[in-house]
Length: 198
Image (cartoon, rainbow, N blue to C red; front, top):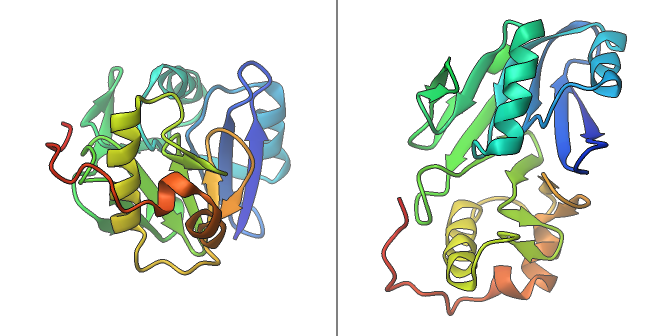
């Protein structure tokens, strides 16, 4: 399996192309569009895009889906039953999936919100905007960041320190580095008394 990072030239967000060593079916995590470099990455590796995974549908990724669906007949996986006018495999509970023939684990951040997902493929954890190098829930208010932090700690408790963090924003990291150096992530004084967001 190969993982390619594509950084959008318009808003510098990361998308991830995952496919086999040779030609075959591939999936894309959190697409923010289909520009020439991403299309060349798919075509030059002789991939066909069969699945689109969304950690949390938002304006950027939804627009990416709209463009990609004009080119590829890819299935959508998200926390919603529909994305725009397209049907989506709605993920509400932790489960193992096989999109594009690639085995993965989908992990909803249930303690925070059923609409935010993590995806784990082998030793790679795709975290969207929830966790990046040194940051929790970038752009969210402090109370939400605490809820996200608690949900992340619970969701990743059994994952190894060597697990690679692949976020939508910023550089890659590892779970071990975040557990050791990210003060928000390792904090245990989150607002357990707060109600879970829906």
